[in-house]
Amino acid sequence: MNNEEYLKKLQSIFPNLQFFKIENNILILEYDGLFKMPLIHLNLSLINPNLFYLNPKEIFQVLYILELLYKNSLTEQEQAFIMSFMNMYLSLNDFVKSHNSENEEMHVSSLGIPVLYSYEEAFTNNPASQIIQTMINNHDNEILSGKNKQPRLVRTNETMANFMPVEEDLNFIDYGKAGFTTLLLIGGAIVSSIFYITSFIIGH
Image 1 (spheres, rainbow, N blue to C red):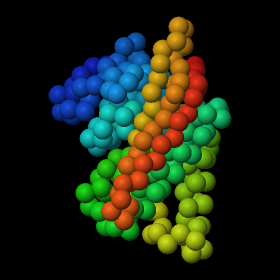
Image 2 (cartoon, rainbow, N blue to C red; image 1 turned 45 degrees about the horizontal axis):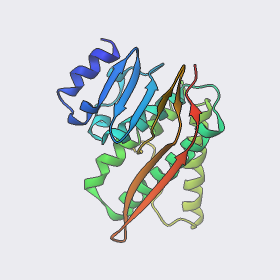
Image 3 (cartoon, one colour; image 1 turned 90 degrees about the vertical axis):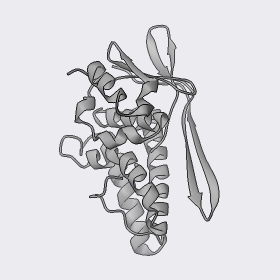
């Protein structure tokens, strides 16, 4: 079953997928903007279906990170995107662990699917995986040194994140004005974390 057929099957189970479609193996999200991404490597049927409980923009971003795991080289914008994604994930993971928030545990677990993938042998030496692993190791070292009081990240947990817009410009798909927004509940306050990435292309 190809990705387009499988997506249609999933749409009868996961309401958030009604905003997606696939044309010529390009994933399209129409939800608070237009988002497009070529599905070059991903097989949706092999991805943990818990991902599809996330909101549409989070689903899209996680799929984008998963695609980046396959690349042998990354642009500066792609590297920056992964780093921002991981900073958000680590903060959210810390919050859930320190507050024993069972309601958010599955959410963070689904967002964290790319973290687990990054430790698989097929990806471990690729640049996206290297960035993820380095950031996790640095975070754990901060915890061990006492700079960060949060519990140490356990990689066996399925733990990760949120979004980015895309515009079609003539002959290429451009992630112009890309970004993601994640709301974290910290001390009863809502903290908005916003990161904008401009003019980057997923090119093959």
